[in-house]
Length: 350
Image (cartoon, rainbow, N blue to C red; front, side, top):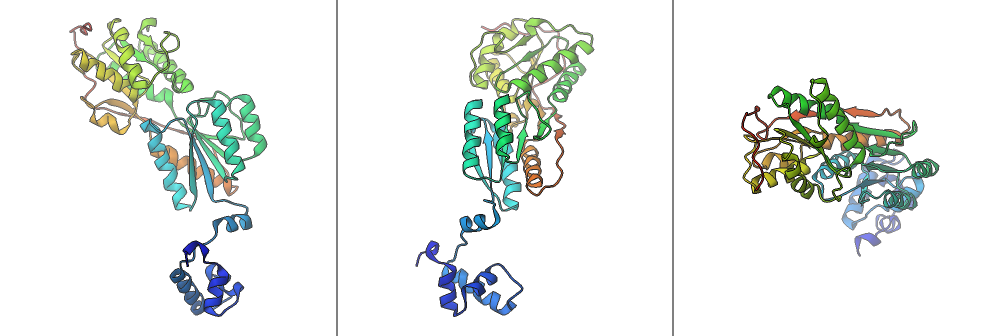
């Protein structure tokens, strides 16, 4: 007999007891003796009994499932976040259903509606781009929800979120380059996560200005202001680097590590030595950063921790425990892509 066909009634017939006795034994009820519980549980294992999760969910009004929405599966950043989510969810015996929104707010809301139809217990959304109307709909369907690094500027008291301090991360990067003697520092942006990009760009301008340096407009390059089509961030870094070098900056802060990887590849193609001729800093600290040539100095985001804490926040919501929004602090991971300022001019590209 196949395991999925084994029922409580089958076990009861084999054991010669009632249906209710088997049910109590499988639920470790104290209403029956330890000897009977052990005998029935052993028999259930031998027969290949598998509990009916659907029936259980109907009883307790829970599916023991949470929905997770991310914008991409190709970005290493989200892979670490998912790892953190699954660690905590697994420990709580929750299944995780993953779906991809591709940076499309309409698709994101469609996924949330699907999760609602599937009766997930709660939802975690990474880099959400929900509109005002989407937020209203989310409130109406009343699914406990936690946002990770939301890219929407719309916030409500009833919605819980966790994020990394983007502005502090860029401040650390600027302080590091200033300490190395750099004064002509560029910012290479991306619209992949628009709110994060705005916060990081603002922090760049403020940090440079506070150091007594007036940032030039051509030191800040990135779509859409410079009419560069939205592309993969690695391609973006390779495409935009020549225009950045034309400004004669001696150091560059990149929006994220993938943009920085593109910049490093462009430098290698054109014979520009890093960090002797140019210092480059990324943001995220993805695993690839440590294996680049040279290894990439970057702002470390606690990505796995983001996933872990977001999931714990969701668990607390599900159990009606108080939950506060959280802002995590980034750190700077110094590697070999940054060095002290050199009087030698950054070479022109071929």
